[in-house]
Length: 333
Image (tube, rainbow, N blue to C red; front, side, top):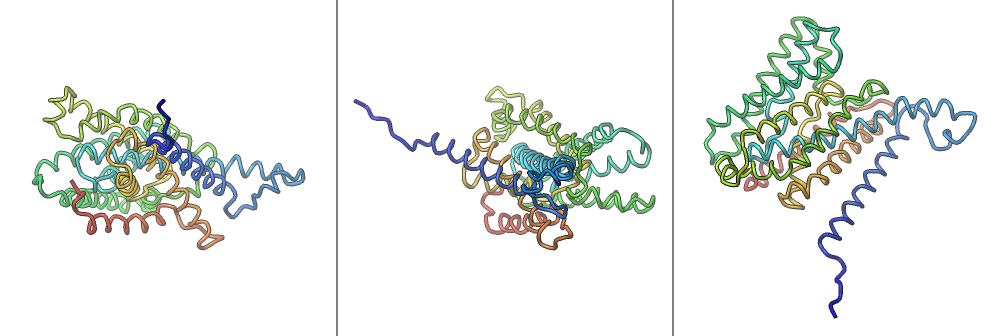
């Protein structure tokens, strides 16, 4: 009689995912009670302070925590999609000019249509991001296939050009302060009514998960994709739209978080391999958890003041990027 073995790979994977979700939940609960406002479980239970505590919880802490988790998870997913489509592990929205192009779109709307709804501004920013990413992909055709490190270098230079043009225009019209808000992910301004567009990124992340197998095949290259019956151009377009919309929604709502879409996919792939459908939930959990942790650290390091989460993760992410760039060059392609 055959006996059933415990500890199968699927069981371990499910158990690990459950542990990851519990860790993320613990960080989310901690995020609710860290900050300048005096919000504690005791104040929520005390009838004398319950009303004020509930206002702080519902109007500020819950929206902020939700925005952190949504932005972190969707940026990690956008990063891995870009890496699949460009076949390079050092590419993500902030190293491909996508984020900078979205910022340029926001500046154009602020200059010419300042009274437009936020949804319209986000869609225009997404259009600019899509155009910028498409131009970056066109530039990649001129890079020799055996030079993977030139890809992020080209993207950083391309983004620098767009960013410099945006900064010049913003300086000319006295909008540098607005530009600074888009370039650095800051969740301290998130309150109820000012972050809800980020819920659209959840739908985009689900769409990315449903198309994970197609992105995996597209990552094998145009010729291989066609041999396997995949419409490479259409898949590329879908991925481009998902990445552009996610980048624009995050930039217009909370600002940019550099290197998140590069660091998380690389670290997860080191542990789990390149099966995108299996690793995508982990990327979402790790992205959300890292942004939550950086935001909590930013609230505690110089309390009662705050360091933006984008700044904290920018320091951490740049160090990991250097390690990946210099310590593991064999994983570039």
